[in-house]
Image (cartoon, rainbow, N blue to C red; front, side, top):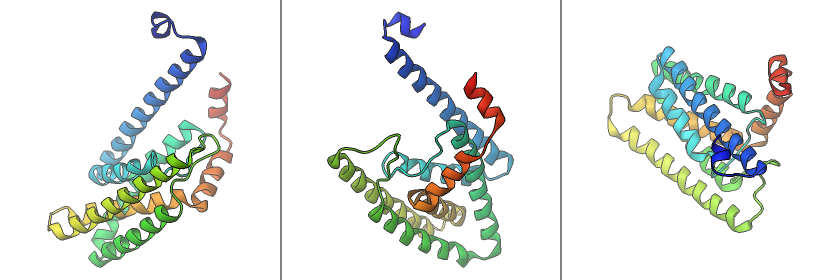
Length: 203
């Protein structure tokens, strides 16, 4: 109906339909991820992990599933899991979070400096100018988040340790999906046969 009202061509109508579908999937993905985090009692940590990774998605790039549904499933599982891991680490030993943060800062800066931006065959970065711009933005973003980790650590805030840990795990996940190992994992996920998804695609 929207396409007819605006006299869009069939090609533009398909693009519009795809954009709306991606918007609905991403919004549902976000809501479900936060819902799982809330059910598990780690809503705050889940949100921090999610926002950290999302900040780098359109600049640094990285591996992702070719299926929006599988990508959503990974998101819904991984971010609440990271928040749970941080919650457990906080209860074990405080210095562990500082060590995790140090590893995240070094790994994150190296990853974006050496690897970013990482494109995919489906969305290659052709322009050298755009590639250089995305690389600079990725490095600046990583420096900002690393500085945020340090600032949170020094803040004395009641939730500082938890937030620091979630920021650190988020950065480590960003570094992972920029690497070949991250791409191998997503390829493996894409290779898993799911009958329900196949019927949905055929429909």
